[in-house]
Amino acid sequence: MSVTMAVAERAWCVVVPHHAQGAQQARHRLAAELAGVLPPALLSDVVAVVAELVGNAVRHAGPLPGGVVRVAWRVREFGGGNAVEVRVTDGGSTIALPAPRIAGPEEVDGRGLTIVEALSDRWGVEKDGLGQSVWAELS
View (cartoon, rainbow, N blue to C red):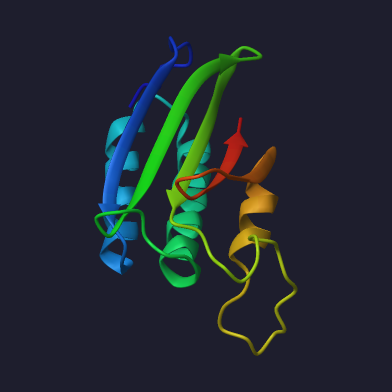
């Protein structure tokens, strides 16, 4: 399989249900859209980051109107290769902004944003009048 390394900027946006199947739908759509566009290792990291962000949106935040989560990604040329920005937007949480935490060895969850932080060049959270977006950039 050949991989195209030079890509004009491309962007996609999908809306998935605010439940676990939504995370699965987002992963499959992202993998299908970017197969052959990104090197396999980068694609794997991007899919893992989106899975974590959508999973967190489903577990810890409310949905956008209509019971959905919006997943967007953008591919652009960067330093001779490609960079990808992913953004997951949900209805936000009244508890706290997303932040990595230290999970003990016996805990079965709590590592999502630590994984996002490890795989991404940078990531962050933005709030607006409609909800909350967690974004990450990978290259």
